[in-house]
Length: 90
Image (cartoon, rainbow, N blue to C red; front, side):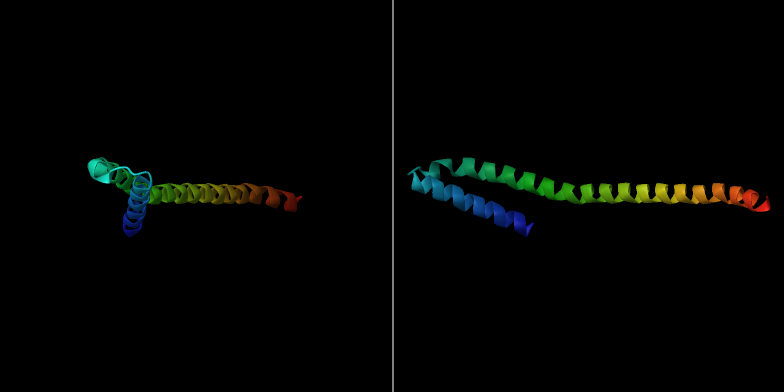
């Protein structure tokens, strides 16, 4: 959350600097700026909350793939074992 707060603070400072540079009155637009920054903060928080979910989904998919691969290799070993025994008896 601190990172988001810092980024929003930096964004606010940049906007204020731009307003001052071009001579716009920030007092009139203070409420508008606050609403925009609240929306930006909410989106950043939502993005931050979704990132672990994406990582969890990727980890689960990788685990499922590993299990399927392992099951296939075990299946191949059990299927090939009787064939090897038959070949040896001949």
